[in-house]
Image (tube, rainbow, N blue to C red; front, side, top):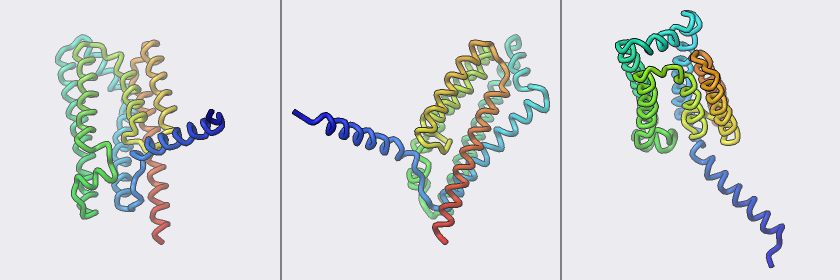
Length: 226
């Protein structure tokens, strides 16, 4: 008969192994050039998210107001959908351009560089993911249910956290944050909140924290070379 303590220790070791395997995709190289690329990516995302939050604040929720007008105007729905699609396309193109530039500076092929440092860009998974998200938002706009877009943005943020895309968080940090965003999206929809300011502010805040983490990793990598 096996020792219960040995079974417990084996279970703990198995869990530790699973944890290491889960954490492995989130590990990045300590190469300063690769970290510089990650810094540029985070800076671009932070600049875009802060700009959107600033537009909402300065022009008194102009984005949410335009979305509300789309409920009763088919032309506004079509224009809004096209603008969101164009914006997402530009963001994806910017991400790939920054990584492609990093690959050239590293004197590596784009495929090898992405495989080593940015696993979520492999096989155009980011493009596919963004297309699915755009399709959902576009359908909501075209159907005139723009009140659900704020809650959907929180769901998208949770998805980025849980899948380990973009944000630089450990699993034990990303999972609770992702669950919190999912719960918040449920309350946001249930209470009928239509403002886009808070979902965008959440994304900007998470990007800021992730940006700080990447900068800290870059500083440690540069210190190790001295």
